[in-house]
Image 1 (tube, rainbow, N blue to C red):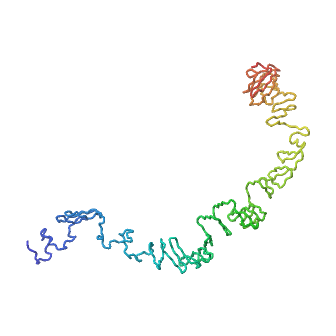
Image 2 (image 1 turned 90 degrees about the horizontal axis):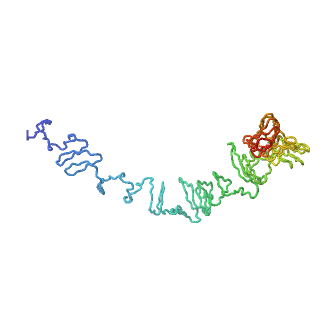
Image 3 (image 1 turned 45 degrees about the horizontal axis):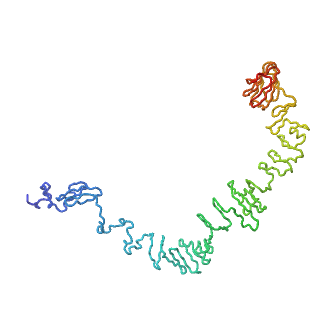
Length: 560
């Protein structure tokens, strides 16, 4: 059937794929729109079909994210590559789609006065509540500006206000000027809240043109604040100053009470004047007082004042339960005399009775003229009666001293009775100088050295050893023993004999006595430091010639 067509006599759907010769279905046999995506062969995900120089289809490799398909020119398929930057001035108005530039594409502050068309900004274009700064705008006469909210900021002097027929105001760079003809009424500015005038500020024409501020709808004769042309300011009520208040001139307070709530009050004036208005009569007390509370439930007052009702005496008080007024009620509840601790120099103290001994007083109101004051235990100091001629005050160590004279006095002081006073010792010059004492009948001692007025004292020794004692000074030592005897002179550290002391030794027994020096004692006049008497009834004399140096002379053995 080659070369021949297929006639319509064939049945519908009678030609199958087996009837087609391979490659026989070419472009001319394909109807338009016959090839759909479903009929196309499978490819790689993301590939794009292009055509090479021979016109054959080729697949373009998948690009990376952000890359764009870029032409490689004739003879080469396009490829994916990074987008090239746009050159300067490369995008013109022709490149924009109409209406494509919206609010999101406009940079901040991109639209200026030059970009706005004439009469382009209308009331509907301004947001409600927007703050609009008006600059270099001339307002013609009769034009009104109404501000429902917010603030109109004015930099230039341009605003003129004529609120009524008599007053005109001008706002300039120097401030606001309100003007009214002299005698035509007040010049006032009303400050309102909610349509109601709360404060009025202005010049009171009926009150010497005083500047006033008043919390009302009009200025009053006595407004809240007033300032005269002389610079005198006055307040109708309390003036509260949050910061420091410096007054370079005089400060006068005419009120009845001045309260200073401060931790530290510094006053330069060295003398503070009190009761300056008390020049006509002495009717008020002058001083100061303070408040304290020792129990937590009772106010107490203490202070110092001059009592106008008591000859102007100054009084220190405490514990008064009612605050003083113009006077201090000395008979008020709790009133007590205050205690003063101070050094008083000069002047006189009167009106004080019987100061106790513990406080430096005598405890007595009066004393006998010429009497001697005596302490009497812990009680008041008492006064002895005036002493008579020849009396002396004598104490016994237990009771109050008494006045004595004559034999009673001599007995008390230990000088005997009658015309023959007796003493146990006499100190000449000083107790450490020369002391004269009685040793025995007819014998006295001077500084411990015995002095006999008729005979010398004898110290009889019968033993075989003996050492000098202090009482041996000036005595005769007798040695009586059938055996040998040793007599020792002690060192000065043992018995401090006075230099020049003489002690004689007599050998009365058959035994021979020897004299030797103790430890540290040098005995001169003998050999080997020891000297023996020659025989029975022999005698020697020992003299102290230095602190621990003695000399022995008389009937003794070989001499050194």
